[in-house]
Length: 283
Ligand code: NAP
Image (cartoon, rainbow, N blue to C red):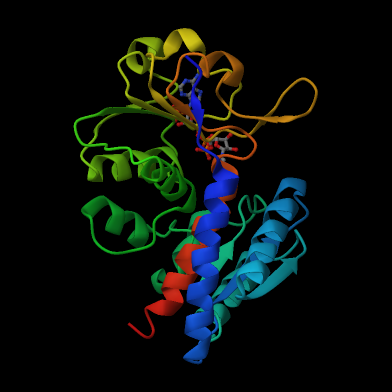
């Protein structure tokens, strides 16, 4: 068996076309959705991420502001910028690119963002809303994974989902979203003694670890859906995921590639969250 691909680029194009249409409709009512992205320091990967986010805003007709600050920026100065953007009526979403320099407490900065503009979904109020099933912003990466499952018409009710990784931005919210759709969910982490014993029971596997080949073909039940969140570099320096793609695709029913899988979906869901933040003003 060779798995079918879940193409994150194609799905993103489709979802971004819908976002663009909704942005146009909102603009006709006098509101242009706006995203502010704050980058502190010179982290090379972060530079690429923020560029892609700003470009996605431009492509969908949204307003965007990119603030670049030196790594020497103080925590107080950053908090002041967040406060100013909280009060700015042209901004509907605020994103502080992580990681921040070591002298700045990231969680403190995230908690300073108004929950109404927390389009990354990292604020404790957003996490609490997801936990309790209340309306709020969902973190973009797991939200994108859910959209990928939805795109193949996958019914999660009654299925066993295994999430590998328990970070606050991917693994834990992913598990909660799957649970909300009535999957039975197992969360694995670095202390899980026999990962293979867990993944072999899974109908759906989400790998969010940050290590190559965490999931190999012998760990996957035939026909399972495999979502690869990981972003790593192989020996040739090329982008790859956590999953041994060539091996696992021989066993799985569906699989997401890296690149071209979860990555573009993350940015797409950021656009969706920003748009929906602005739409709430006229709802
Ligand atoms: P993270 O905070 O480092 O969390 C990694 C998780 O993996 C931790 O919970 C860790 O367990 C677990 N883990 C480590 N080694 C393991 C092992 N051998 N077996 C099972 N679990 C293991 O990373 P993250 O922020 O969640 O990101 C995960 C990956 O996704 C990274 O490659 C990141 O670059 C990528 N990512 C991609 C996107 C995208 O848009 N495509 C977005 C976000 C992140 P402990 O908790 O026990 O330490």
